[in-house]
Image 1 (cartoon, rainbow, N blue to C red):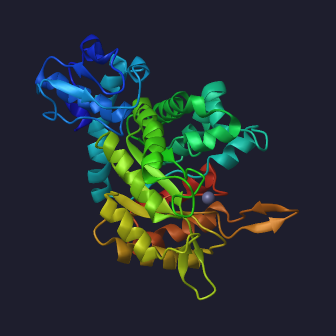
Image 2: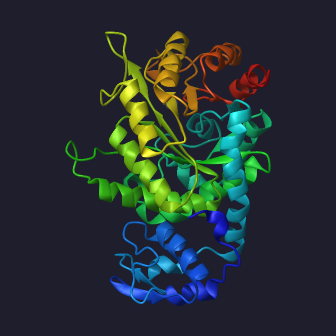
Length: 385
Ligand SMILES: [Zn+2]
């Protein structure tokens, strides 16, 4: 259901769902409102909900959710709904804009947070709440350098990852704040990618987590990113195509935002590019596209050189067919200096690979580990040529 259809939203009316609990029903009073409520249910209780017409009588919506009425306590405020309506225009434009011109995504966030004073081992996402101005400044530097797409500071924002810092109760707050900060920095002419990194464990059968559990984890994070103003969702640094499939499905359960899916590849002894899970470029890309990803590609990568990234780009484009490809290389292959992994490619060296990547068919270029606003600013002129 398109987000833009939520107009004339009346919080009080939707709140008729208040008091609903597991296996209860919330009455809605008009077809329009029913549509809106279904959207909200999809956002906030995304696993089990009754679609319109699934109930008897049909003007009621089944709330077959395990979520309690608490889920409704943080129904979107009116101004956020109208912000989302505005975003939906941009959301549509993102893909059509990409059809017209190649676009520049931003670069690393983690390194920039460390430079700004984040301590080693500290949770960078906390800054979305505690030091939003510092996060905004980093986004702003990328935007000033010409980046079209700004990635929210929410890479580790899944409850399963935040739990490592004892902050699994703050998924909604920290992701929503992260998206809102990025939205502010992106401004009118920019787009916000709501960033979703790996959930930090393995799906069955390697791990204990079921796809349904992961779906719930992702939905919780994505709903907050959308509420904060994300224009699209970026599911990134993936190794397992099954995790990508769950991630893309979770975005679709939340709304009609574009989904960008990227994998981290490494080069095998045989010279093939594979994810950490051993997935080939073709399988990784095809499964993401079949799941419904609107843009697909690679970021990061282990010890890849610029010629590797270029070859990887060719393989991604070949596998992706008509689906636009994104590539976000690190600042060259990492070097180990004094026990620290460092990326030493200069802005000029990064700028030099932009044209070859575009010629290979890549539509969005950005940066990953070791890149800075200076790198991305240097990459803009060859992209804009
Ligand atoms: Zn990286």
